Length: 422
Ligand code: EPZ
Image 1 (cartoon, rainbow, N blue to C red):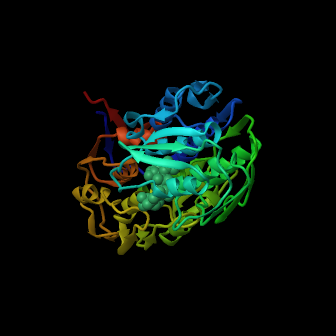
Image 2: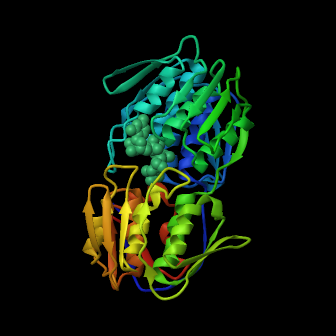
Image 3: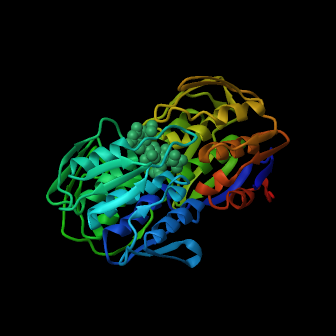
């Protein structure tokens, strides 16, 4: 397993290109299952999760060609000859559940492994299943799989989500495009990745209104066509790299970044003493003066502060002046980066979904372990500002969501390299 070795202390200067959004691409790719026509995705990120979704779609009989060094994905589901998504692929990536709605909507049947939990929580899929049942799907859960049927096709329904779920909104949205009649999704997720999916589906011929608000209305159509669609910029990668100059000092321009993708996050950075300026090329980020101010953070569904930036923000606040309180309201176990940061001298007190962080002058390098995707990059950020060397182990987590992280940071003056594992 590879590791990443960082020697901290450099103030970063330069520009970092932001890639297409992993979490948009992971729902855009299964949309190929809704049509017999070709779907082309441009600005696709080059990540192991994308390769996993590619393998899953190919196991169903879809053709997925990765072109231009992985930045373009050409998909076609003309000949789906297998409607079973196996556990050995689904357990590696929970987003695999997003093939359920599309397969059911177009072909009337699907067998998809339940994803199981992951490091940050149990992450059930009950909201996905209830939405599809509301649209007439017959679901039978047995031997760890969802056996789903809709012999007469899906029908429009009013689906009210008890709480916001990104994945359940995506599964229901895709299924509703081919359901007979009108579907209304209430308390729907408002994330930019949902807006991106709706724009692509509309290009394919879907009739959708209200994406980006809490109520999405879909008028089902008989069939969908193909499309060519650019994947939206990754707001989580953007926020992560905005924190690099924040934690080290210096100034970095995040190319392709747009303020509306990270408004709540940028507001918090401003409160912490970090300036975010819109330029023609993206967002330029620098510290307003010496230290970083302590701030309080509560994670919420979009447009609130993203849970996927909580670990990275904690790294910054470990070096802030004063005490910060971070409340994680989306997942039940998303503070696993805290004990690793404490190995670097951070002062963090975790009680349930709340973490109190007392800022220290300097973190100190230490060997640490990545536990999940966003925790791993939080440790890299801390290492950039720490005194001495930090070895971050198990960086396969990192490669799921960040392409060429060491190259992008080295280009801004960081001393960082990948150490090949056995
Ligand atoms: C998506 O996961 C993202 N993944 C996550 O990013 C992100 O953290 C999350 O949305 C929240 O923004 C992808 O888009 C591939 P949810 P998802 O359904 O859809 C509970 C990353 O780092 N829930 O909005 O799985 C769930 O357990 C990843 O890129 C149910 O109880 O998130 C969680 O506590 C991590 N039943 C909460 O709702 C359900 O049926 C929000 O989950 C569905 C969800």
